[in-house]
Length: 276
Figure 1 (cartoon, rainbow, N blue to C red):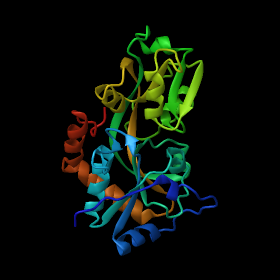
Figure 2: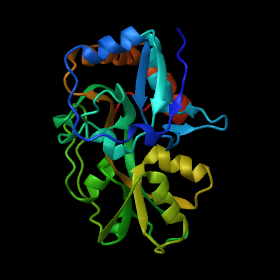
Figure 3: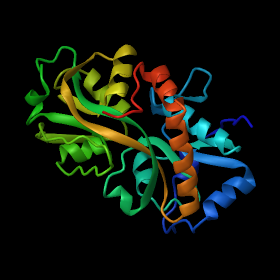
Figure 4: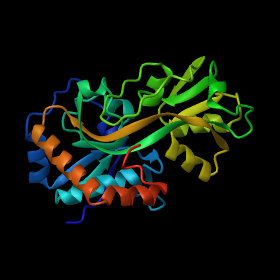
């Protein structure tokens, strides 16, 4: 069965307070009985996930999500809640999985399960193209923008813990004087675009996303070597071992048969699926 896509506005699903975790098998059973996989991702984070010119969800993460749904023989719909809501866990059935390039940090593992790392990406710094800054070390003491509740923000706070297998070690080479926390990387890039030091001195984010922004006309320049490399995983709410095992099986098969390599090269021009 070929999955179809449907975007649901974030405002419809973003509200809920006292929520409960999934029960074992319940989420997988519901997905299979209804024939629908509901996926949380981002509508404004090219090339991972974005709305294309036809107002349809597109991108690397979207292709990965569609392939997971296809291998489950179910249809697919996308929802776009704020990143902080996704990472908070306790989804209470508002969506089934997150395919949004999430790093499996220790803190997130308290409320979420990470059944399948599907690729690794470098995290880098960028500045306005006219900035005098030439290396990331020159950003020490500067005002740097990062997505709220992201690994980028945690890195700037010197509080990032990534314990997934295969994660390269890293050091806190850059300690900002001030952190400007925004809802997404695009908002940070818009601040950088205003000029060197106008609102911020630089931004930290996914290197593929920064390069895509540069190609799209943002006046930015990558500085220095990557800050760290992230294993990026599918995430589900804690409590459904059957769904966890099913997603793990599918992601492992996508690695083994070259599907993730093909998708990575399509969107990034390089195979990020194999790690470092």
